[in-house]
Length: 151
Image (cartoon, rainbow, N blue to C red; front, side, top):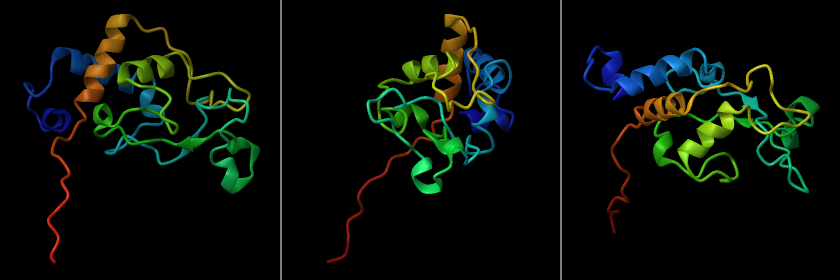
Protein backbone atom coordinates (compact mmCIF):
# COMPACT_ATOMS: atom_id res chain seq x y z
CA UNK A 1 0.00 0.00 0.00
CA UNK A 2 2.86 2.38 0.86
CA UNK A 3 4.40 1.97 -2.59
CA UNK A 4 1.07 2.63 -4.32
CA UNK A 5 0.70 5.78 -2.22
CA UNK A 6 4.21 6.90 -3.19
CA UNK A 7 3.24 6.49 -6.84
CA UNK A 8 0.34 8.89 -6.30
CA UNK A 9 -2.62 6.73 -5.26
CA UNK A 10 -3.95 8.82 -2.37
CA UNK A 11 -6.56 6.14 -1.61
CA UNK A 12 -3.95 3.40 -1.06
CA UNK A 13 -3.42 4.24 2.62
CA UNK A 14 -5.49 5.65 5.47
CA UNK A 15 -5.13 9.04 7.11
CA UNK A 16 -3.60 7.23 10.09
CA UNK A 17 -0.96 5.68 7.82
CA UNK A 18 -0.12 9.08 6.34
CA UNK A 19 0.29 10.56 9.82
CA UNK A 20 2.43 7.57 10.77
CA UNK A 21 4.67 8.09 7.73
CA UNK A 22 5.18 11.70 8.75
CA UNK A 23 6.04 10.68 12.33
CA UNK A 24 8.37 7.94 11.09
CA UNK A 25 10.37 10.33 8.93
CA UNK A 26 10.25 13.19 11.42
CA UNK A 27 9.48 13.41 15.12
CA UNK A 28 9.82 9.69 15.92
CA UNK A 29 13.25 9.52 14.28
CA UNK A 30 12.77 6.00 12.90
CA UNK A 31 14.37 6.98 9.60
CA UNK A 32 17.72 7.45 11.33
CA UNK A 33 18.30 3.71 10.97
CA UNK A 34 15.33 2.49 8.92
CA UNK A 35 16.05 4.28 5.65
CA UNK A 36 16.00 3.66 1.93
CA UNK A 37 13.71 1.47 -0.10
CA UNK A 38 14.21 -1.48 2.26
CA UNK A 39 13.93 0.67 5.38
CA UNK A 40 17.32 -0.37 6.74
CA UNK A 41 20.68 1.35 6.86
CA UNK A 42 22.37 -2.10 6.78
CA UNK A 43 24.38 -1.05 9.84
CA UNK A 44 24.65 -2.44 13.36
CA UNK A 45 23.12 -0.71 16.38
CA UNK A 46 22.71 -1.49 20.07
CA UNK A 47 19.09 -0.87 21.11
CA UNK A 48 19.49 -2.78 24.37
CA UNK A 49 17.85 -6.08 23.49
CA UNK A 50 19.50 -8.89 25.44
CA UNK A 51 21.91 -6.61 27.30
CA UNK A 52 20.24 -7.19 30.69
CA UNK A 53 20.74 -10.96 30.49
CA UNK A 54 23.16 -12.67 32.91
CA UNK A 55 25.24 -13.30 29.79
CA UNK A 56 24.48 -10.32 27.52
CA UNK A 57 24.02 -10.82 23.77
CA UNK A 58 27.31 -9.54 22.39
CA UNK A 59 26.06 -9.08 18.83
CA UNK A 60 28.51 -7.72 16.24
CA UNK A 61 31.21 -7.61 18.93
CA UNK A 62 31.67 -11.38 18.44
CA UNK A 63 33.01 -10.60 14.96
CA UNK A 64 34.81 -7.27 15.39
CA UNK A 65 35.84 -7.48 19.06
CA UNK A 66 35.30 -3.69 19.15
CA UNK A 67 33.57 -2.26 22.24
CA UNK A 68 31.45 -0.02 20.03
CA UNK A 69 29.83 -3.20 18.66
CA UNK A 70 28.80 -4.68 22.03
CA UNK A 71 25.15 -5.67 21.74
CA UNK A 72 24.87 -4.26 18.22
CA UNK A 73 22.71 -6.10 15.71
CA UNK A 74 21.93 -5.32 12.08
CA UNK A 75 19.00 -3.01 11.44
CA UNK A 76 16.28 -5.19 9.96
CA UNK A 77 14.25 -4.24 6.93
CA UNK A 78 10.76 -3.06 7.76
CA UNK A 79 9.28 -4.58 4.61
CA UNK A 80 6.68 -7.16 5.72
CA UNK A 81 7.44 -6.25 9.33
CA UNK A 82 3.91 -6.96 10.55
CA UNK A 83 4.26 -10.52 9.26
CA UNK A 84 7.70 -11.27 10.71
CA UNK A 85 7.22 -11.41 14.47
CA UNK A 86 8.35 -12.18 17.05
CA UNK A 87 10.65 -9.19 16.95
CA UNK A 88 14.32 -8.36 17.49
CA UNK A 89 17.24 -10.74 17.06
CA UNK A 90 16.14 -12.94 19.95
CA UNK A 91 12.38 -12.92 19.40
CA UNK A 92 11.87 -11.31 22.80
CA UNK A 93 8.98 -9.06 21.75
CA UNK A 94 5.77 -10.69 20.55
CA UNK A 95 3.84 -7.92 18.82
CA UNK A 96 4.58 -5.05 16.49
CA UNK A 97 2.84 -2.71 18.92
CA UNK A 98 5.20 -3.82 21.72
CA UNK A 99 8.22 -3.38 19.44
CA UNK A 100 7.13 0.16 18.55
CA UNK A 101 6.56 0.95 22.24
CA UNK A 102 10.05 -0.30 23.13
CA UNK A 103 11.74 1.72 20.39
CA UNK A 104 9.69 4.88 21.04
CA UNK A 105 10.76 4.64 24.68
CA UNK A 106 14.41 4.68 23.57
CA UNK A 107 15.24 0.98 23.71
CA UNK A 108 16.66 -0.66 26.81
CA UNK A 109 19.30 1.50 28.43
CA UNK A 110 22.80 0.07 28.73
CA UNK A 111 26.35 1.47 28.53
CA UNK A 112 26.67 0.72 24.79
CA UNK A 113 23.24 1.81 23.51
CA UNK A 114 23.23 3.86 20.32
CA UNK A 115 22.00 7.17 21.72
CA UNK A 116 23.15 8.99 18.60
CA UNK A 117 20.26 7.39 16.69
CA UNK A 118 17.86 6.27 19.42
CA UNK A 119 16.37 8.72 21.88
CA UNK A 120 13.18 8.35 23.92
CA UNK A 121 10.25 10.09 22.23
CA UNK A 122 7.12 11.34 23.90
CA UNK A 123 4.38 10.17 21.55
CA UNK A 124 0.70 9.86 22.32
CA UNK A 125 -1.11 6.55 22.10
CA UNK A 126 -2.75 7.78 18.88
CA UNK A 127 0.65 8.60 17.38
CA UNK A 128 1.86 5.09 18.20
CA UNK A 129 -1.22 3.66 16.50
CA UNK A 130 -0.39 5.81 13.46
CA UNK A 131 3.20 4.51 13.42
CA UNK A 132 1.96 0.92 13.48
CA UNK A 133 -0.50 1.70 10.66
CA UNK A 134 2.39 3.05 8.61
CA UNK A 135 4.52 -0.03 9.33
CA UNK A 136 1.65 -2.30 8.27
CA UNK A 137 1.49 -0.40 4.96
CA UNK A 138 4.98 -1.72 4.20
CA UNK A 139 3.68 -5.27 3.85
CA UNK A 140 4.33 -6.61 0.39
CA UNK A 141 1.69 -9.32 0.28
CA UNK A 142 2.13 -12.60 -1.47
CA UNK A 143 3.20 -15.85 0.07
CA UNK A 144 6.00 -18.33 -0.18
CA UNK A 145 5.10 -21.87 -1.01
CA UNK A 146 7.26 -24.94 -1.31
CA UNK A 147 7.39 -25.72 -5.02
CA UNK A 148 6.83 -29.19 -6.35
CA UNK A 149 10.31 -30.47 -7.17
CA UNK A 150 11.13 -32.74 -10.09
CA UNK A 151 11.56 -36.41 -9.22
